[in-house]
Image (spheres, rainbow over the protein chains, first blue to last red):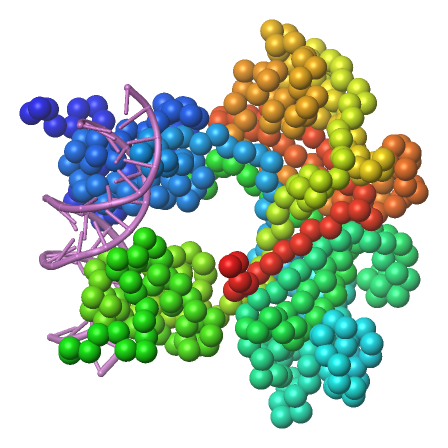
Length: 255
Length: 255
DNA sequence: CAGTGGTCTAGACCACCAT
DNA sequence: TGGTGGTCTAGACCACTGG
C-alpha cells in the first residue's frame, strides 16, 4: 500500500479546481469512454474515498453532479449505477426563438404598432377570470423584425392601473412580465405557454409579409401572480419559415 | 436564550423528514408567501444554522435545493438573495406529444406501413456522414393513430447490420433508439431534434387524412453514438390540429 | 478588516438491501 | 449480518466582497 499515483494521475488536492469537480470529470470521462458501461456499478463511495484519500462527503458531491446530469443513478443499500440514456424526451427551449436572433448580432428591433386602453370584453373577462364589467386593460400590438424583415407579431393584454402611466422607456423591454411589473401592482411569478401550429390569418399575413394561410408558430402565454391569478395574456405569431426549435438529449458533450 | 420554539414551530430534528428538506420547504414557503421578496437577502447560512441549532452543511443543502429550483441565487462574499423569476424561457417537453396520448388511456396504436432494406442515396450519405457506396440502411415507415384517427407519420433510417434480423417483436417499440440498439452494434447515447412548422405534402395529407398543405409539426431527429457518429435519422409529421406543446415557467407550485 | 458563501474533513448514525 | 447509500455534525480553511 505504499504505491502512490501510478498511471492514473487523477486528483490533485492542491489544485485550484475543486476536488469534487475533478472527480466528477474523471468519472464522467470513464463513462463517456465506455470504461463504465450502462448498468454497471460505480465503485462504492467508501472505496472511492479511501482510494483517492478524500472525504466521503466530497465523493458524494461529485456523484450528485453525475446524478444531476442523468448519467448515473443511486439505489440505497445497493449501489450507484451507470444510467442508460433515454432519448425519448425532448426539451425545447425558447431561447432559440428570440435569443438566437438576439445573440447573433442581427440588427433586430421591436416596433410598437399600437398601445391603448380598452374595456373588458367577454374574451378578456374569461382569460383573466374576472366578473366585473368595465374593467380596463392595457393593450399592446408589437412586431419583431430583423434585417428589415418582419419575423413575429404579438398582442399583449394586462390589467390597467391608472396610477402607473405608460412610459416610453418600456418600449425598450416590451416583455409581458416587464409590462406587468411596470404598470400593475402584481408581481409576475409564473407563466404558462402553449405552442401550436396554425395557418396565419389574412391580417397576420399582411403584417408579416407572408402569404395568407402560411404555416406559423402560435404561442399563447398567460402570466400569473403568486395567488395564481392571471395578470397578463399574450398571443404571438412567429413565421414558420424563419423559426425552428432545437433540442439536444442524452449525454451530449458540453465542454 | 432559553426560549425554544415559539410561534415558529419549524424544524423537527426527530422527524423522519430530513432536516434539509424541512428547511427547504420552510424557506420556499416564506418566498412564495412574500415574506421574502425578490432581491431581498436570506439570513446568512451561519445565522440560520445557529437559529435552528443545525449544522451549516445542512443549511447549505437546503439552500442548494432553492438554487436548483431557481428561486434563489448565491453570491460569494455578499449573500444569498431571492431571485426575480424570469418568465422569458420556455421549456417544452415532448412528453406532451406521445405520453399525453399514451397516459390518457386512448387506444392508440403504431402501424408499420413498410420496412425494407435500401441502398444509400446521396441524402442518406449526407445525413450519416459516410462516403462509401452501396452501404445498406433499414427503412421504416410508421403511423401513430388513436381512436381510429391517424395522428402522425414517421420515416426512420438506421444503418443495416445483416447479422441482426428484423424481428416482429420490434413493432411493439418502434422507437428509433430502440431500433438502433436492436439492429446495429452502435449504442445510442445522444440525439438532436429540430422542430419546425410546415405545410404537409399531398402524400402526407393522404396518409394522415387531412387537407393538403394543412399546418403540421415537423420533427427531424438524429441519433448519435458515443463517437458522435450519426447512427439513426428520422422525420416525423404531427397533425397540427391534434398536437400542442405546453410549458410552465417560474415558481409554479408542484405540491 | 470582518463577514459572506465555497470547499473539505473525519467522523457518526440511519434505512435499506442482500445473504 | 455486513455493506450500501442518505443524512448530519462540528469543526476547518479558503476566496471573495465590502467598508
